[in-house]
Length: 186
Image (cartoon, rainbow, N blue to C red; front, side):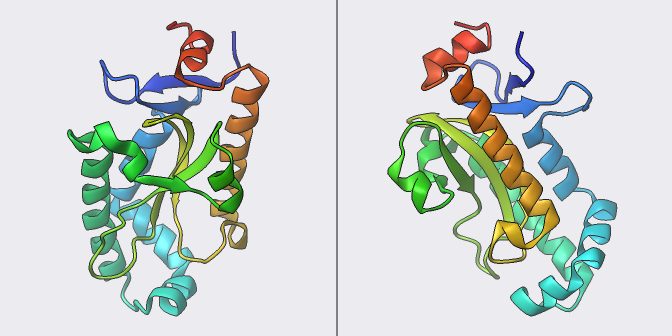
């Protein structure tokens, strides 16, 4: 029995998984989209981070940031969940940093809407790559600063990513098959 639980994001497909904490209602990916489509959550977030929004994105109105987030979340959800995009997750996720680009096994990755028109997307989905087009989502964030370490909420996401990678490695996971064995679906 493992301490970390994982759920399939799309029934019948074994290419996208998400961490599911036992005490939480939703898995990590579902939670992200719930928050990114919740005006109250976004209002609180952008009020708390208004300086980063102004300084890094030159947006003064929180209502504009909320609307942009709704639009971006819809587009990102389509990219990650709808066919044919789901068959090519390697086209959506990129290595988190240079160290992840050199290690193929359990590389940390990030996804966002890379073709956002108005301004660069601030939405991020973080995941561990098990093998070609197979990922485990560990969380995500609204990233308004350059480095994840710059803000507590993104630093927490970095910790979740690193803990999941360490957990998988400690439990002998190195590809989809070993992950399925760990998850009792082998």
